[in-house]
Image (cartoon, rainbow, N blue to C red):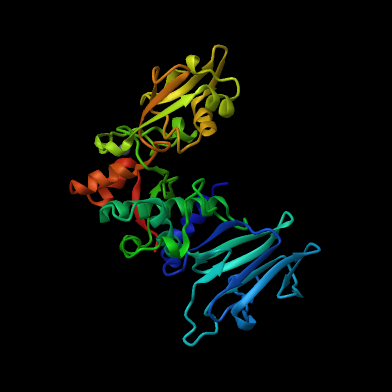
Amino acid sequence: MFRPGALFVCLLPVCAGAVETMRIAMGAAGSEVAVSGKALAFGTDSEEAAFVAVAAGRAVVKRENGRLTLNGNPVVGDALRFRAGAFAAGARAEPIRVAERQVRGDVVVRLSQGALQLVDVLPLEEYLVGVLGSEMPRTFPAEALKAQAIAARTYALHKKLEAYGQPFHLGSTVLNQVYGGLAAEDPRTREAVEATRGLVLTYELAPIEAYFHAACGGHTESGLEALGRDLPYLATVDCPCGKEPASRWTLSLDAAELKSALGAARPEALGVLSRTATGRARRVRIAADRTLDAVTFREKLGYTRVKSLSFDVERGGGPGRVTLVGRGFGHGAGLCQWGAKAMAESGWDYRRILLHYYPGTELQALY
Ligand SMILES: [Zn+2]
């Protein structure tokens, strides 16, 4: 549920200086997980928790008989929060290693539906440094990275308001934003985040749903067509990415592949029945008597194979085969990353790039 009131409060100067934190779900960990870090300490899952040192800087948390144990000792409650560096000289926060990953901030291990769930709790700005390196090539121009940083910050804040009071705000996979932890950090992404610190895109004072994608192929898609989100700032705009060779793709499919992904589909029947105003497939015929909406068609064959809905179906390439010839990568709504790259290379700054892809929005400093 959306809470415009909550943001309005936060946009007032009284919130200036407050650290905005994010809670990022890192997935389930079965019934046992090891947490380690320099000067590791644990406490309850709250911002005001009193932390207690963990011996040897290593904790094994298990789920035993529906309760949590820490290094073999039962603990009260259904969540534990870990912080590294809490008792180190100078008390500087240190990274935590958990489930093969190294992350910043605190790590919460909680009981959830019979398993252990991991949540990383970290300042929004630190989260963005880890997101940016996973979402956009670090070699992209600085103004494109800054535009992406603002879009990712705005998206995260919107999700946080939407998930108000929930155990976590966002996951860490492509279904949300890809958070890569320390492994995804880079001086260039850190610089883009720091240069735009606290800047968010708003529409009528609320942070927008700042969707983004890799390449639109020449025209972005409306929020309604791409994602079922009929929002004024997710309108179709022209984009220079269509000239980039990287935005072209083909996919050859045979009868067996179509059958395993779509059931009764036949190559000879495959065709696009209707298209959106930008030419993307809306409804696809998969057999003489069967059709599918194009979003489901893409989902079932795989988002990385059918890279976008902007495709034509071509015959040839052998009996029983069809080829999809497409443009772009992703759902096509909001910021186009390859387009932002092209604009930055032709001298556009991040403000101009963002206001192109999210028309009618404003840039505001949240802190
Ligand atoms: Zn584009």
